[in-house]
Image (cartoon, rainbow over the protein chains, first blue to last red):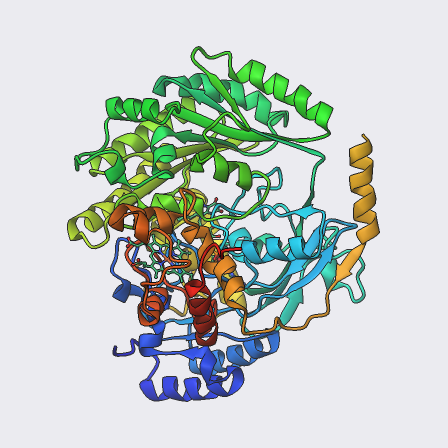
Length: 522
Length: 115
Ligand SMILES: Cc1cc2nc3c(=O)[nH]c(=O)nc-3n(C[C@H](O)[C@H](O)[C@H](O)COP(=O)(O)OP(=O)(O)OC[C@H]3O[C@@H](n4cnc5c(N)ncnc54)[C@H](O)[C@@H]3O)c2cc1C
């Protein structure tokens, strides 16, 4: 495999830089050529060669990372950073452009502190949900974690991407407290109270004094996060998972109207995860379990599938947490409201078949037990998968509008409409998945076109994406153009101030320093 | 209420467990790598996406990779480092070559040892 060098870097400079980096991290933690195979993404709409890195580097600690930054500054090397690199559906472990160097922080995986008294942990970027969960189990902790559906994901990486889980602590960035960050020039910064020498409350209070910078280091490229604190939920005395199922596609409007005050008043404490039957089915088996027809699955067929699986067209999962009596009272209120729709059914622990993977993995996620079951989705149609999350305000009209729009777009490009409507405290996410066989060139091309269509049609109607696959970062940022692209411009100015050479993940969220006149296509 | 108070009491008792910042000991055991990187997908039931896919493709006999006597070590290594269709690859920063060898040994031990 011929090495694709970073743009503008000579092969002699590259070789020299690699020689110096080897001395810092050791030969075994520098990966080149065919050792880069596991750094490729075979599951997107563009072939892996499109984003083959020139090298991958895996430092063991902050000092080694600082030393790498020095060399990167000297030789103008773009470093694409991540902690676990399991960001599947959004680009996986590959950098934005071929030739970038991957800075793989997986080896920095210490759980630095578990504080039972204040209910927090302080971790490094390589710590995964599985690892943190196991650590808390082994040490007899009384704290729950809140994990994203894929348990191999990273506590820090997921939070930096504004990721979410399924307990009341689901919003991972919101529940974070205190960061340590390396800037492009190698300087180290602690945010919030952590900036004070001898500070006693770095993980108890987010703000410290002065402007709050933490958010700036999420979903961008202004720094490398080397430590981060997270609040953990103490195990509640009672936990009661539930599911409400609904017979008709058209019930969505009423469901979302009923849900709005329940979420706003926190009667429904965690995310209200409303699986369309397509989503529920895809967690149980590949597409070939349900149809042999290549055309998108029709509403009539979904109805039959729902009947066969003893599920609704809509299946809303949630849970109650707290004191046993409160939990029963709260559940009573939820049940009264949510079953006012004709045909609604209630499912509790023990009501589903014992081997129902759908119920089982949700009941685990809602109490922070990490697993991988949702990856059944990835098996739907050959492994290719791209996720989109247009965001709308909670309520029936918007939910129905977005649902219909996403159905039309996905079906229009020849794909099944696989969706989950997740109610947050004020809004909802219309998670939409494009599943395709990446080895089928035509399907990959359609998936690519479908993706752009999803982003642009939703944006034109006022529903913005909250995350983006590498390929569509510029398309998504291209929809945040208000006030003469004011937001994009301030991001660019910050980039110019902090990283004028473009050492750190250039192009992440379409943020580039002005010195980079090239490489703007994704 | 009792339960809440005892829960809170327990938390106070445990206090802060501040660990010294030492690096984790490597290599990890095969069992540990299995838990961190494979079991979630390869638990041999409907909750394991790897098992589900292998069952659909090849039938019940090939559903479980833990305890399989037919998977060659070279094949496992190849799949882990390069991925296989719906399975994404794993990197040496996840599982080192030495850890992969331990993992392969672990896979070859029976899934349910006879008591
Ligand atoms: C079937 C399926 C289900 C999913 N379910 C969920 C879900 O429930 N919730 C959810 O949130 N996501 C979900 N995802 C998306 C994704 O898998 C997770 O968000 C996953 O946690 C991201 O991978 P990671 O944690 O390894 O992050 P990484 O790949 O390590 O990081 C993600 C990005 O964050 C930045 N970053 C990471 N570490 C650093 C650092 N130290 N310094 C600076 N920048 C950094 C980088 O830009 C990086 O590309 C799902 C995906 C699939 C395919």
